[in-house]
Image: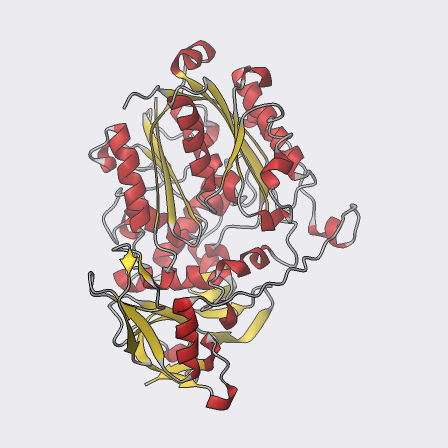
Length: 166
Length: 388
């Protein structure tokens, strides 16, 4: 099948970076503002108060975090707000040494999926771990939210600065 | 349900390169011209065209399928674009299949194109907006996070070591050394090379990941009466399946791709497959990361949960093994121009089942293969079963 591969031309990085070939550039300027909706609006407002809230479905009995106004399993409205703990278990984590633009970091960021106590099993949220030696992080580790001081909270997921080992 | 039989009768592709001089339109034209040449058909004989291409953000062109259409041979024809993220390349032939199986058309040109190179400073930028705009983006995530989180969950669940998973990268990059279109084929790479490569987002290291790639692939699909006139060796599309999991990805079991299993069950049922491990002779699962090949082999029910690494270590998945996996060299070796990479897998099954894969030919007259891709917010499985 060799003859069915078109001999397309690959450019070297040098040809591109030294502008040995012509190219056009364009910079995206796109700005958005989203109202946060009913469920996430409440979630963020409660974060500002230092609490984490989910939603309960009476049919499947799940407590869902992040909260949602409809249950995607039962496909019916969820029934009530349910506060969950700011303590949980690390379900998985990474030690990330690069930013989105692939610039290297000297100290890794530690994103993790954390199952919160009081939410249904497997209902994790993504956040970051801090105040921990990266070599000591383990799946199954118990962690607790470190909240920003009330005056600095804005109603954002970052009102929790990070989770630290319990 | 009465559906017509549909065959793949032609395939062609571009070389997979880090940065192509050609534009996306030109790459599309190159792949299509080779696919038509392969079956000695002309564009006039193509009733319709399906284009698969992943995010518009890569090219920086809104509605890029329309922009690509002329290169894809779609001028003046019924045309559509399918897009399910990384799953696109195996979804597009499923769409081509139902265009013909339904009786609506007799022939269909399926084209998949991707250029990742235009995005600056790095294609990861195109993925920043994949994360939830309310609960995740403010944390400053990057795409590697979710793969690293999934890989770690998989390793932890089954007590796997990096060495167990690096074997996949070594196998595929070695296989790709025999692929004339490959970007990263390397006949001499070792597990130690993978383990020594730069750590990006532990447990993901540089050589665990497929490269940034530009490329295009095209197939010609035909209804049975046309296929029998065109070629003595049609390769039939025996089953197709696809399935989407929840977008609340942190609420999923990250150690097992249930959505791949559901997609595979749909495709196997259509193909009449009851024991996939015995009835499938070649697999081309999606391998943008080495652990994903293992994950997907389990989702495809070709190995039990947590058992794909051990089978890999025993050589079962080598090109000469009992179940060759990614004999093409996969995304890790041939390259990963997202949608085109998925369709490359279908083209590989086409060539393998016709005995035309050259140095990559799997021995033992394979009669049936499965290809699979994966994408969106790591939630979609797309599966195609092919046989001769």
